[in-house]
Length: 394
Image (cartoon, rainbow, N blue to C red; front, top):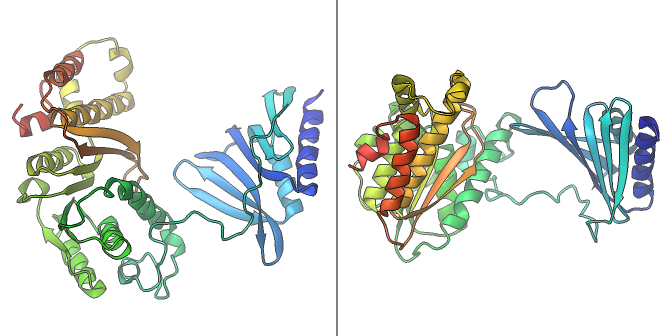
């Protein structure tokens, strides 16, 4: 069967699923088009006041764009994209899962599988993801930070920032659920910047969960400290304040949580060390600009099996990031923290999107085997010391 025959059969199957009310969704993947950073396309049917619409979500590397189309227009768009911009199209319906795949310019195939769904998803336009910061009306800080207008509506230009805020709260929420609610939870946000995430975390913990918290933002830029303190007062956030200073000079008291998002280079290590020394139950970092290890690798120029690869600057940078953050995770484990590394939404100022989370445990600490692993990794690349090792006097 020709490419056109397979494609036409697939499009006919879509139309039949719609007519029979068995249509669930379509996913287009294997992008071969010309638009930068576009990855996948997801299409489903939603019900709005004017009737049924095709809801398309265009998934880019760092954002989603959603558009609604009339039903027939949606079919025409899919017809244009399938086989031209996308090699693979997958239809999920209650009758079959159907996959169209373009193999070459003149060859394709279509496969019918048993349905993976037993019921259709909801078609309500309001059937959207529940957000942690769902109520924006009356939240003064969101308005003063230019996230919402005076009526609480999220501004178009701030949609990505609002999404990042919610993603951040979704990550931290389960990590804080086992904290002792009888005592005040003390949190320090190192390098808090303009305070978007600091305000949101305080609001969620204090006003959504009703926890007793004390949150301090640490920021070296005086104008941002003054701005955030003013917003905190206007928002009635009595247990939230911001202080001017560098992370390494912050006077650590007993803290439960230390956060450092996009703290540049060794400032991340300063924050981790402060967390370990204060006995923090939770340490959350999103490292940025890992220069220290890269400079050591370049200075020593130690030859190993990866040398032919990391002679290219971009590969060296990524390797240095991996080593830097990998050793950070191991050092946290050495000091009794259970660690995990996850993907975090990057902000407008950096593409870095790795988050390292350390949760304090009761397991045996200072395992010499971990130090041996760290030593072996450093030896491969000719690295003498990780900055965090110096801070912790190892």
